[in-house]
Amino acid sequence: MGATGAVSPSTTAVITGMGIVAPTGISIDEHWQSVLAGKSAISRITRFDPAGYPVRLAGEVHGFEAREQVPRKLVPQTDRWTHLALFGAEAALADAGIDPAEVGEYEMAVVTSSSSGGTEFGQREISALWDEHPSHVGAYQSIAWFYAATTGQVSIRHGMRGPCGVVCAEQAGGLDALAQARRLLRTGSRVVVSGGTDASLCPYGLVAQLSTGLLSAAADPARAYLPFDSEATGFVPGEGGAILVVEDAGSARARGAGAGYGRILGHAAGFDPPPGSGREPALRRVIAAALADARVEPSAVDVVFADAMGVPEHDLAEAAALAAVFGPNAVPVTAAPKTMTGRLYGGGAALDVATALLALRDGIVPHTGGVGRTAPQYQIDLVRDQPRERAMRIALVLARGYGGFASALVLGAPAA
Image (cartoon, rainbow, N blue to C red; front, side, top):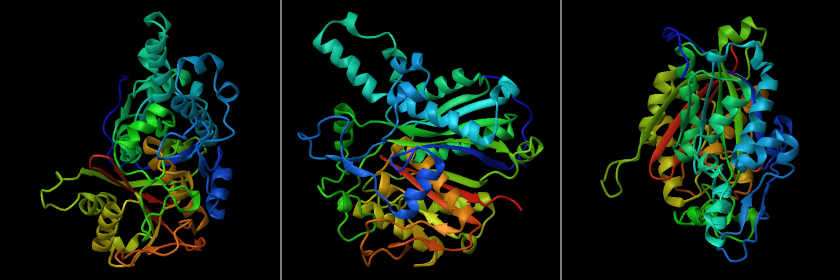
């Protein structure tokens, strides 16, 4: 870990670069156009034959060839989840206009979100052990599966020797990682590569997900993932995510980067009480704490990017938290891009943040594709059918992870 400077609480964190690698596209524009068109990328799994599994649909990243888009020597050493992040980091740095060679190596940091680590790589090596002999297990198994592998590989690839870490909080981790990026800026880092990706669409990875009992077994891709819908039966898994470049606003302007895509204004995280305790879930308190951290009143929030799990019990808890903070039907809510990509776990919240920033930029709330009507018990203004044009300055992004994680991030449009 590199040395850092004095704490600067007044630092304003801005996101100056984005690298998107998602089922909806492997560029910013491709993803955003897919989202606005409501173009779903959920379909039958092709990375392996899912015929013997109850869940056969997922959001896969197509058009990504690791040997063409990642340094070739790294391909056999790392998992697909890391391949996606290496591509995303390269794209994000280019989008931000940053050449790492021109920044002090100890002034660059990396903090990413990870959910399951390198499951596909791990399954391949475990199969070699089972079917063959220990000598058939590759040496890179010791690091490729590890939750911090992506952070480490991005750090090594770009010579980033400042503080580096990984947040393991399932879907909530993407927001928590960005909050940590903001903290690192306050202690002297100039550039932080953050966000996250995931890629657990292999037999081992799918079976692990099935154990939660939260996945949808629907056969129709158009009706498989329906958050806040009366016919919701769970969510669809997916792969991919987004890597983001976070900088101090003053530093970004000084190097000519302008105001970036937007500002990180506030964050809070919490954990649900034990089931059966009778205590309310953490999300309402987390939202209130994030708004307080941002010094933003609920009435100032223009759009909410919901966690939108697609599980009736969890959707009801989220809708209740939103109604308690903002009032019933008081703020536009969207479940985009999840209903088009599936839940991306460690990569999902980062992709939500990227999508929210694009929504603020263009003044468009993307719609929740596929949801026919909001069930009456959900007192939220869910944007359906088509995008909604609206002047916006503040967005709230929510994320929850399996086991009780809850996180909220407040984003602001670029400063004038």
